[in-house]
Length: 374
Image (cartoon, rainbow, N blue to C red; front, side, top):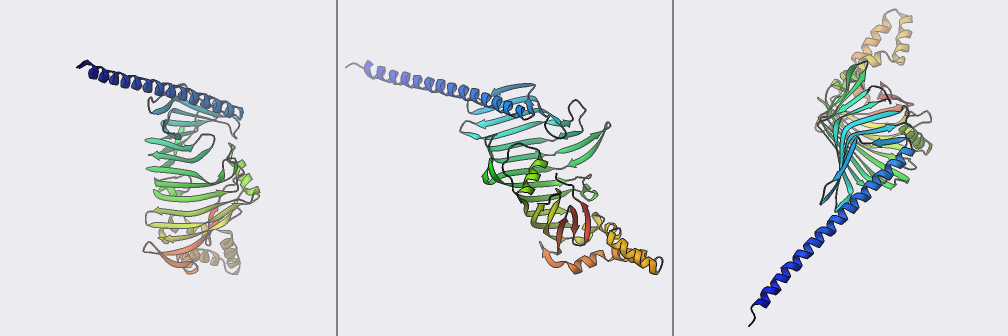
């Protein structure tokens, strides 16, 4: 009996298996390098189309990697020049890494290296943004995204003027999520946007925001014809022309002892200013009124000025007494005209937050003017 035959057959099995493994590795390598080449060509085509619209993206150096199960693009000394925007902007970052899994090519994960600077072309930066970590995710394709998320840990934004910097934003955590709720990027999209702020301070926006606050805000943007790249003032003008609106489906803000929740809708009038109303419930009304300087705003409002002037004509000094009395009784007056309720077990009052041609009022309190959107 020939005992060499089973041994030979076993050897051939191992050899066949080895050949199949080598072929699989070679085929996979060919696929990966071919796909990487296509991805590189896609990026170059996207850059060329963007450049025609006045948006030039560049890297000081770039490389591709991630073999065998990822596609990665590393862009060092990344820059974006928006010559068509008003004003033109030159944005630079230390580096960007974009990656996708081979088995999930429509999910792109990005990581950003700071700082990021914003400047007029050829000028010193007027905005500097830094962070502990910054990541993005895009579901879909760069030309037709379905979901986009940005997540920042320890973000810091500083304005720079005359060599001096000023704090615009500090936070422990920020998340921004956007998704296509209806339609498509090219045909009447409805966009959902959610914002989360943890420990955020924006001292230049309003003195009351110099103290840390937590916020979650969910909105729905309606009225766009498409979501092709264009300046935001042009988008807002389009929303106004289409009779669109911004629905605030949920908003929650907590700062110290104050807690506020609200929802409602606002539109944009032909002057580019907000018009509409949110229904807001506030617990901790007194510290909130103090933080926004409500007493001073009411005492110097045109309505109180008229009343004080009329009283002064009757008796000099009577108008100032009335002005002081209005301020002192402001909290009691708002509680009297508002709807009494509870919020998370705390005594609260519900008031309308109104936008009238950009002028903003919380109940009877004038909060200031919102800027025109176009």
